[in-house]
Length: 451
Image 1: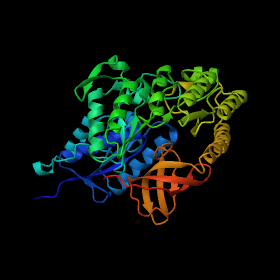
Image 2: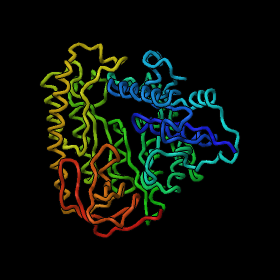
Image 3: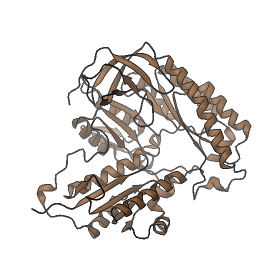
Image 4: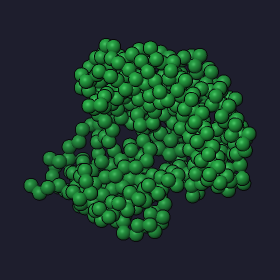
């Protein structure tokens, strides 16, 4: 039998783009294509790009150039693909360009330039599909697109308005992932708190019973799924949650241990005027009240957020207001971007644009303050016993994460003397030291989960 045609794959960008990549890879394998780990072994290469900020655009263009230099046959998809003219101007020799979340268009291009093999024995993929994450955690994308029109963001122009997946479909995917051995589900979308708005919170079905297509109902259902196997359990982590009042409904679930006491809420700023210019909800005062209320209900909650420094028109006093907010809020995990005048963002039309050096200087000041806050909060965990999920076991040590640590973006827990553990295992550890971002611990009562 002839060897199947091979496709190389480069995946860039956020977890939502990663899920798109997994969908394309799953379809490729289902149709009998092999996935090549290198350029020289591939018959063509698909590059899934990011186009959110200037640095991401450049990284994507560089990746396309590298794939062309190393292989020569390249199909481009993803957010940068929505700007087809920009891609073709930089790299006119690409075979095809499609936008984000464009599975059918990508497959049409693949079929045109690398015909599908006709061997039914290769049309077999696992129910959970092909995943690019380690076996023990997976991203669960519940919606595509966004209804908001934040002035610094071009995602709606790249990915369109909100389109929520039916809740029954989401829960079936979650079940398949858990049955395949996934120990942590990371719920993602452009706006997780808006899940179901476009469907008017339509009632779907899971396990023979009705469930509304709504974030809080989904969290309840995932909590039930996660708790079905009491011996192992499954972590459920919420990302990209807009700060809206109904978000308060999921905090009791965290306090009850149904889902992880972790919430990723992009506040973006604290100044009421800047938030209005950004077209973001709430204000610093409103968000401080909400944070206090969340911590009262669930004292162990970990709050992650992202902010933009140097937004057009931001005064020094408004930036200091943001710093004061951080001091008072004492958020556990924070990311900050210097404002990037990405092409097409409405904020670029605002007066008072700051020079790049000033934007970067404010970003650095914010992160310097947050490092002190992070170190202070992590110090409180020294001496405590935590449950962790093991990510890596290397000669130099074992790396794990606690409920407070999402993969890739947060800190980790370094474990000494845990050679008997394996990725995907859970263990009880006692923290003996902390630094700015990470914890250091030793096993207390490690236990292996069924693979």
